[in-house]
Length: 387
Image (cartoon, rainbow, N blue to C red):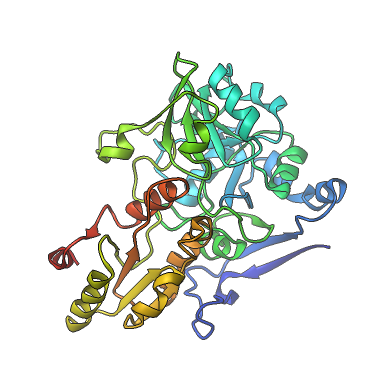
């Protein structure tokens, strides 16, 4: 039930398309601990004992959560957290979320819990929700990027909970990928990005949610008002069942500037981008058809990321990846990053992506797509001139 092995990034093969080998940027080994989420609590604790010890001692280890794979380090150690930034190539002003296995760990990194944060935690933990609260002096200054708040989350993935519990320290963890690339939802994604940069990854299977946690600022003085800094696995509609007023940060509505000091991950920098440029097609299906034809006439090979509902209508694309169904947008969220990554194993020169409604989980999907596309849409054929 428990296995560990050393593999080389050059030997990992992508499952899609089957004939296309992975581009190996590194040949350094990465340790993989295969842990089955269905194990009992005692079995899980035994299975993660080695990677937990490495975390406790200050190494960086990747692990699964229900959202995406995280790159973990001891949140109380400056040197451990710096290893995370170095492995990812992450900007130093981009704060990290701290993961806990129980509410008993909160005082290790937070000065206090506001009333709004407590209510949200009681409703949505463990799960894909991060609350921003006042930090204390014990948490690494690199976690908070010098700000007075810290983001806290308790993941629901049993392997993540066991790893943190056995490590015995809160774990700082952004997504386990090279900064700017699509987040990883499998251990294979992690190995392709970070082989040679980290000790290893705990393989707990594919992530269920597929997009990162919702980050909510609960540090204000109004217990009946919170602000969404990053949409994610918990929707605004769900938050409103607990908190009377749920605002959306202006940066999400109006875009960001270079002078923005990000209070939470995902607010400022380019994220989630495959090699080929992404454009979001926001219009009728006929616009999709015409855009494919125009680009192909220019000699550009076109990739299309769409749902099952549009698969039959967009066969003219050179490469098509189906990312779920509009009837269940949770399926799109689950496959979003994996779908974007698959295009890196093709020869497309541009990716045309389907747009989605911005309600419920659709808000998080579109937030990630917009960042992946650099806020570039195709609403008319003239928009193709930017490619």
